[in-house]
Image (tube, rainbow over all chains, first blue to last red):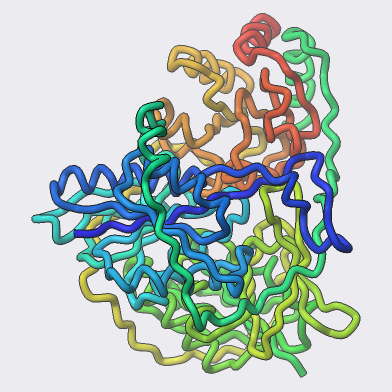
Length: 253
Length: 315
């Protein structure tokens, strides 16, 4: 059995970011990278499902340039069995359809039983890579999972999914399936120093899919979000703060 | 002539406020606005009111007792087929995001979610604005496609279009639902805790900074005394410290109170999405770099339990 986990090595612009070429993009020097937290949670779920089934293999896959290898290594250190990086200059990182199609072109080769993705990335927050990937693979998709467990004989999963308003649904789904996972579904784990060293030596396979359709999306310009609200700070004295709260509560009632 | 299809939703038996926000946004994008609703509840909506700017309403009954992403996708697809719009506008929430991308992928549409602004430029081309690289930077994005564009808009960015008198021009499409093989709905779990966050006037919301269940009790006493409603961030609910009914945020309740006091909440994007529409926000957090301060009107870097102590003394 194979479980694939889609990993995004997210890029967060620092407060001091500068822009390049007529504000066409953020200067990459100002981007800080990390493994997306929901994807990391998905990986930990995948490893648990693997260990419970006793015979599955967990493969992490990510789209991007060489920088992404750092994120994939962190996943290998945590316990993924294999890693694949997908690269093509036809892929736009800002377009979830472009990214999901690239993922699909490689994931379909091994046809894994389970594909897990984070619900959303903390840098772009589309909530769409999983659903689009499922569509592209021709698979069913369960979104926004807050619990995943084997249902019976490792042929189906019981999934609890969340909706807005605190409503949740429990459903049972047969494999193969794509599931998107909420951060907070499990405890965050960190790799040991020894595992980090071990992962340094592991291979990351490079896949360069051809004939990908070019993205239809084009960034015209980037700009800073206007801070329409400038926070007015109150003196850091509990008594003054408490007085202010009482005053504001009176006004609001 | 360009046609905009707004995919609306039914909430508690009425066309939702969010749907009316989408209509306001749509009016700037085309001259014919069609409201399309695919819902299992559509037969039970008694009051399909007329809304400013809407040419007509097209409905589909999904006949599904549960939310099923695949049924919702095919029903929405049927609406698009029937209307043949240039622009499709949908709400950005978990339900819509679970199938919208699949429609865009299959139909090869231009696509974006979490859109905070949408307009036509001086050449009449559709432009959207959404965050990239986290929450600090926004991008203006265009589409090279000749095919339609599907956008999911963020809540509370547009004023809801007005409900007006008169009968809405209404067409009902026949639709036979086909659920997915190998997917079994077992049960719905409704949020526990009988509180009404949605219509609360004042909310004291607690985050991880509260530290212990004993401290939560102190806030429960304070909330009772001051006549305010107690909210919470997701980690607190996940830890089982407060029932899910208290949760503010994207998987919890979206709130718009007159006053929102955030105690020890750092401000994850999912939380900010659920409360940044509050009229007044006061954030209390010992970490001065907490993202909550970016949406707050007032802030204080002080220990929340010391503030609780002082509130108790003053009351």
